[in-house]
Image (cartoon, rainbow, N blue to C red; front, top):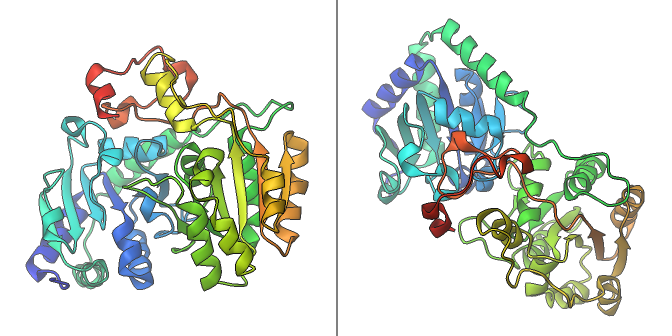
Length: 401
């Protein structure tokens, strides 16, 4: 494949980015695949241009989440500010991303006013889903290196007044606090709270996080903040339930002294629960953190929001006792049902030298927001339960599910 970009197109890209009044970087899993140097150069270029940046589910960690340029994840369950910026930007710089349907929403309403620069090593990805104005074929690392050199050589001047207005608009979107949830419940654990506490109590340990697929995956992407690549292993695209536990096995073997946590749903983890045997055989201290709502939560959420509450085959009435199951595999098990039990359980899980299954019983009816309904545009996001009735999902959108 072609790894080095066309210099003439690099020069054109620099002119387009410099002239932008509302630029946005959109990074994806191709950055991670390209390597740590590509992620470092991407971060350097974002900071040099001083433009906002969003990342896909598979790109998390390519830019430090603590960087003020980072708007959060983009897409169906991405941040309000990320999706609104993607809709309203005038130049989009897509690096190692593929414009998949979970990111774009309704294609004919996708970022309608922007010119698009697409960096990808695979020529067949260019114009595959979204027409772009300037393709840059090459390896992300090589393209970013060329962009950095060209930008520094050109020393372009941007419209400072327009850029300041763009940042003010982004700050207004950020002020919507799109991840807010009901923090007043003391009788049950909200899944968002569970992940907030898991992140707060483990962040200093620099954990490796794997996930299964479903609501818990999206909440983990929203509430964990990754400052480096290769600490977030999840299944996007294919979205395979059962991915997280065997992925955690691989990560733990590669990093024997690290804290490795599989953020799981009770339905997904049962897809490959036999890997607890592998964990036992190789004495791996993998931690499984199960958000247990007794539903295939994302299926239930879509049945509620898109299909009028006609629930079918999404509830599980025959779950195992995960504490006994852990014991059967020589691991430690614990179940928690109240918020005031959670911190102690997490600290015990971290301290336990064996593998752990922590069964966290969470609110069965909690939905994952924000959400772009299937078939909707970025600026038609649902921010919470109150938005359901105001913006019904179209028949065309239901078909896309």
